Length: 366
Image 1 (cartoon, rainbow, N blue to C red):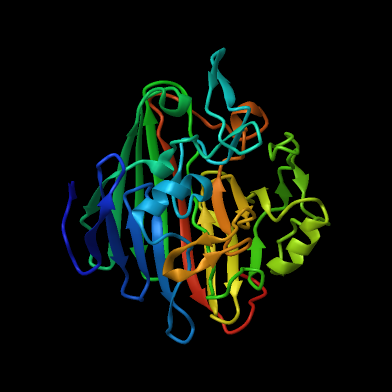
Image 2: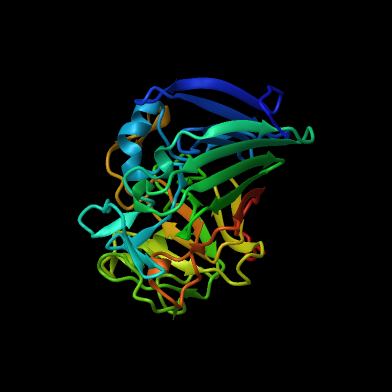
């Protein structure tokens, strides 16, 4: 049973009216440990995520905008904090096939002939129905629902989507559910850009990714279909490594920064450690756990003079995304994990962002 109510852990405030006249609300979830997450039902967007640093000073660790108008105008380019769907990441030529039928999606990846993050009007711009789930006094749970109609952005099937955000102690849990009435493809993720300090870039952050392999891409950032080892490459984050060290190496390979999918170790569908991000000056460490097969590391390569919230200007490397996901373009690669969802099946994945504190760089996160 879902109820809309107010309590000390969840507050609801009107954020604005969308260009289509729909009410958009901001939901503030709080935990007893001081973690505060502000979420919009527009795009299921994490607008703010406040956490005390090692000295007790509150820091907003995600990028975003101040107003709904800015989200509507600019977030189809940046996707700050949004839920991404129906298909996160890229689909080559905006085309895939199910049961000998070819589906064509809009192309929205700049000069590249791809569909990116679900198309022109993906879940990032949808207004979700929101409710609070009554639970114990130590958890704040926000439930978001959206019905994606058959043919929306070219995808087949009526897709019923539920996303839940659960805030408890020092962790944020995101769960994704979907059902369909026709065979379709689904791949949802959360597109927050993290910066665990008040600095202009994340270059001083340390990163660990629990993946021995990655999926190489071509000039259009579409996977070639190969799965290659990270050893000896700029993508080797199996031990803590400063982002700036990796960036200097990846630039030599012709990339602006990281925009790569890693194969997360372990069994798909089981919750397991995927990545950790650490910033020494604040002492904040964010660990990521997921049931998904992959993780996209994106370092905000195309941010340029973007006026963000709190009066900040975002430029390249202002934040990074750790997008838990199926592999990019999986519908067009038989050797990748299947993205197909059939009637009667339930799409279900979970990602946990867990925060901890360290005085210095830990050698082992998990």
